[in-house]
Length: 170
Image (cartoon, one colour):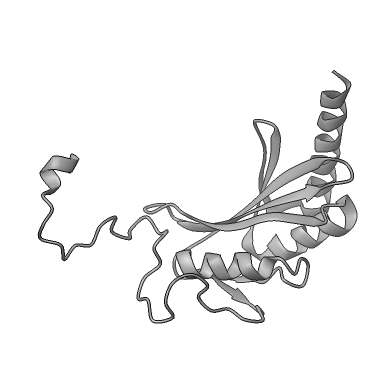
C-alpha cells in the first residue's frame, strides 16, 4: 500500500525533527492508531505549535479543546489536532497542567480560528488563554458559576426532589 508507506515516512520525519528540536521539552511521542501524538511541557507548547505550522506545514487547526482527569497530578490539559492539507497529514498535540496553573498562551496569533475554540475551552473547562483578544463565555451565561465539562460538575441538578437516584444505578 503506497499511501500507508508515505504516511508512515511523514510521521517518522515529524517525530525525528520534533525530538531533535525540542529534546527534553517533549514528554512523549506516541502512535495512537493512525495519528502521531506529541505530548509537550507547558512552557514549550506555543513554540511547538509554531514549529509544526511553519516548518511542517500544519496550517489548519482542526481542534483545540480541554481535558480533565480528576485525581491525577496534572489533571487539566489541552489537545490540538493539526492538519497539513497539502500532504494529507494529521497530528495531535497534548499538554497537561495542574489545577493551580490553568493558563496557557493563546494560539490565536498562529491560527485565528483558535479564537472560538479557546473561548469554548474557557467556557466549559475554565482554562484561560493569556493574550486572547476576547476571552469570555461563548455558550453559557456570563454569570454561570461553574465549568460544565469538568468531570466534577454534577450530571443533574442536585436541588431536584422529584428524582430517586436508586432507579438510575447510583
